[in-house]
Length: 158
Image (cartoon, rainbow, N blue to C red):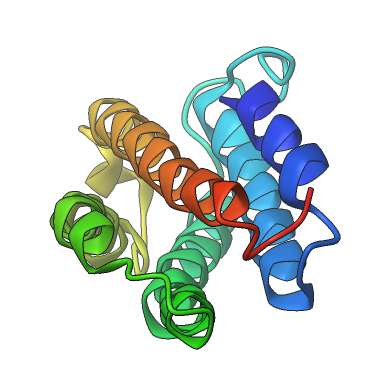
């Protein structure tokens, strides 16, 4: 997942300031996800459960990332398509419900862990974090499909 994020930055970075910022946010989110999950190359970062402040910070990043996609990036991409008379309606009809499903999972995670006060509330954290990771991976695949489609129609450059 980290490698895919880096590939996305290399492929679509520099195409648009908003996309650049969004891809940077995505990569930062992935790094912090890997740290919380104690996955390589960050497996030695965590002994036991993560620090509550790290979880809260991650939840803030998570909400910012999914919000910027829904309320900023997707709209800009659709507008860019419309400006060049390229209809994205079918693609968005296919992808948006799938992306929305992943948003629901991310927001549920945030609702449960974003304001957590003590480690006794973390008994299902690893399971929930794993489910979130699967949702994030799917979401990023869907977002990459959208970016690739726009790239194929020369709405963004690589």
